[in-house]
Image (cartoon, rainbow, N blue to C red; front, side):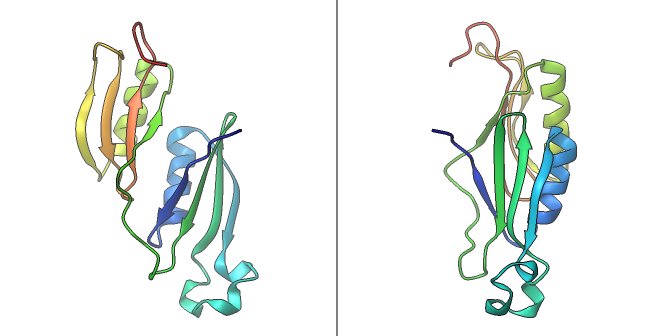
Length: 139
């Protein structure tokens, strides 16, 4: 069984995934717009450029995304995407990038479980935790 987060956006999926590709060092493997999909005739023409399915690979992990239809969009809440960049310097770099124009909840810092930990909500409204594995870190 594999677990793959599926992020929901309010018209910013293409911009967000392009940013995540650069910031996280991933690779976009799918970026399908509503207009390119079989759903083209089911959405308003102004939605043809929005994304019905995006996929970003990060090593063996996959992050998916969509621009939800206006009647279906709700801002994310109740979760964080937990990212372990491995190296604390890389953790700080990724945190700084994700935090640009976002909301830092806990500044990146050393904790008793991680040499590099921080929480933020990025400019696209997606909540992230950066936590580099270290001595005494859980799981």
